[in-house]
Amino acid sequence: MDVFPSITFKYDIETKAVWRTLLTEFETGKEQARKTRTFPLRTLNLPSGSLHETKIKDLWQFYQKQSGAYGSFWFVFPEMRHWYKEYIGRGDASQTTFDIPSIGTDPDQLVVYVDNVETSVTFISGGGQASSDRILFAAPPALGAMLTSDVYGKLRIPARFEKDELTDKLFHFMLYTVGIGIKEKRL
Image (cartoon, rainbow, N blue to C red):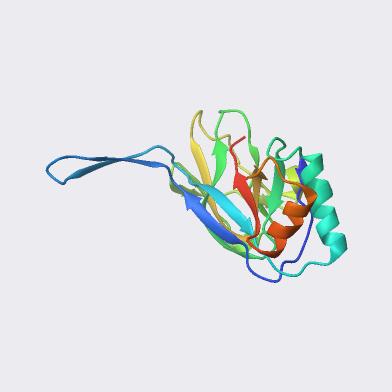
């Protein structure tokens, strides 16, 4: 998968977590809620503002290369920050090395959980998909065990463009006014 172009935006990237909760309201006024996702999927809005014309051209070419909303790519948040309970994957009782969803991770602030229980791992800088950092377990996590982590670094997520049909003029206009939408996806 391609990696989204490294661009410094004038403003922060707007991030929204989408949990997809099912709510049922009864005539008595009570509600019943059901969570359909263990982890949220994020929608991002790349901020509007002034970008150099060459950066806009790079983004447009990347959009074309992805065929709009069709192609998947790795999006790496440009700033270092804390991210909590980020999904790594599931154990298969044989694999010991896993990519973590972070680049430039501070190993002193890395906490890994197996089924919500803190677990010690060996940190490996880089080497993963899209240059993500990795972890090594002494023994493979059990089949189906959920692996999550708290990290301080640049979050790396699989994503796609939100809009599928944009002209070059509309793409340029959106970058300057409302921003460009990106949606996280599960692989």
